Amino acid sequence: MADSPVPAYVDTRKVFLQEAAIKGMMPLERLPRFREILATETANVWIELSFSTNESKQRLITGKLSAQVDVTCQRCLEPIAIELADEIKLALLASEEFSSRLDPTLEPWICADTKLELAGLVEEQLMLCMPIVNYHPGNDCLDKLDYAISGDDPQGEGQTEQRESPFSILKQLKE
Image 1 (tube, helix red, strand yellow):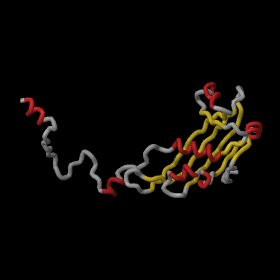
Image 2 (image 1 turned 90 degrees about the horizontal axis):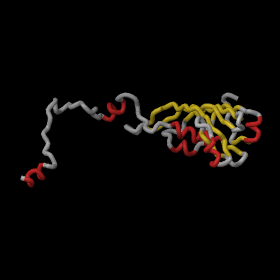
Image 3 (image 1 turned 45 degrees about the vertical axis):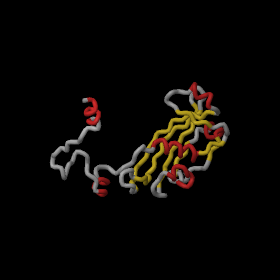
């Protein structure tokens, strides 16, 4: 089941009882919010999830996800390919009131129903592991856009310009 599509949802009663494992590709069409922030409609999202119960009867979802996506560079507004990867350590809770008793290494995932939609879970994890700012490495963007790097003074050749202080008028009024 390595490259097979992931089911749309799982029955939480069955997957935790059977300690199931799911591996496969998540189609981008099932991730509408994540798709909105991408530069192109091509992406490979691969997930691996394991469902288990610990000794205190908490239902745990562990695994990892990775994705190769094209996002917009914040400097030149051109697409840039990045790779996302994240470790998933969630505890499935029926309501938010149980989150106070949760192990600090686990994040809560609220699911009051027996139907757990995997696309929502994967989409949320992908959004959380996205970098805040994306840009091409090095000076690729700066060279392409003909920006001068700070510290370089190609026309001034080291000359410093004397600027009048905005407070000079106040100094004159004081005298």
